[in-house]
Amino acid sequence: MSPKGKKIWFDGEMVPWDEAKVHVLTHCLHYGTGYFEGIRCYALEDGRSAVFRLDEHVRRFFDSGHILGIPLPYAPDQVKKAILDVIRVNGLKECYIRPLAFLGYGEMGLYAPDNPLHVIVAAWPWGAYLGDDGIKNGIRAKVSSYTRHHVNVMMTKSKVSGNYVNSVLAKNEVKKAGYDEAIMLDAEGYVAEASGENIFIVRQRRVKTTPFTSILPGITRESVLIIARDKGYDVLEERFTRDELYTADEAFFTGTAAEVTPIREVDNRKIGASCPGAVTSDLQQTFFNIIKGKDKKYERWLACL
Ligand SMILES: *Cc1c(COP(=O)(O)O)cnc(C)c1O
Image (cartoon, rainbow, N blue to C red; front, side):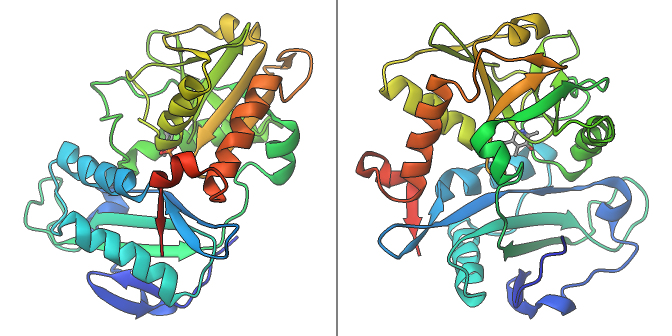
């Protein structure tokens, strides 16, 4: 799918979609020296639209640049405004939003402190990343032979463009083997996360997710942790092994793109008796109510246009 819209915000200007171009010697194209965000805007039941957890996404976008040592040349409010403007200018009620900061054309060596840092914000309609059937009935995952980045090899808390070659290797490997998504183990062999999603397991109604070691700190992950605690579930952020995942009653992925997607099978082993399980369904339903503006308790997470 090639997305197509009207305009892209590019270094402070609204540029026609087909004219948002860069030079082939753009530093980021060669070395992955960029960082991005993935955000969703939802149509609410009252007819308005709202960006889900805009402040947290913008904060993480700045954190990504700070970690990389290539900070954004804007204030957070300017980035927020750019995001909201892009949605409006493109006439979108519901969409995926992709801010990206990247080192541009200039010095071709690795050390390029004077190359310009460009920033774009694009938006386009994007349905369920792992499919509508995946959201409803669960997906089939496989543990990849590729290890998730070691915490001192790549900066795992930053959505650095170059980090995603690791995810692409894992995703391509399992897709070619006939599975929907790749689960990656950390350098010590514990379950880390998926190629672009965090992972949760449930056993005896106890909800567990991997801690902040090698994972990308997902905003959907954090939202689901808050929802689960508010609902009174026992919630743990603790490392777990591949065989603990196999023997879970339920498992699911969280991410802006994947939302809350149940996992029905891992490495050809069924997860639990039925999928999605009761706890997964409960958390997923609450999440979908919140993003539709049906749950007033979490209204603070919605930035209306
Ligand atoms: C973006 C991302 C996630 C999910 O984060 P959200 O904030 O929930 O979208 C999880 N893992 C990786 C590797 C990611 O890049």
